[in-house]
Length: 116
Image (cartoon, rainbow, N blue to C red; front, side, top):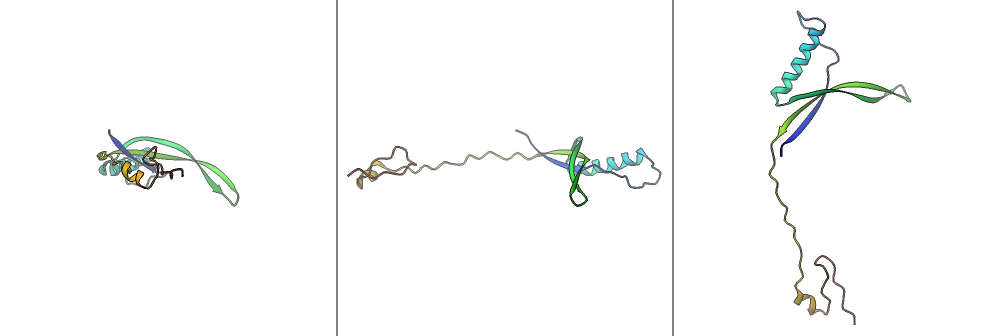
């Protein structure tokens, strides 16, 4: 079974100045650089989401802002499934009968003393 890990990064809100680029081309270059940097680390771009975030505005009020997030994923090396052994403490019948105690109904239940 394939397993993935995800990384969520805030989308750039403002593109830095780049000589020879203006407007949408400048922003596209910023996005391209971000995606290429993430790709070098093995991350694949999945999608962009806009999510509401409630933030404090002033001393007592709150305001909802919408943040653009970029979602990336990459495969995680599959870990082998290792079965954990279950240890059941079984009481031998001979030892249980020596002290006059009754045999337990289940190995994990405590033994009750025999009625006198």
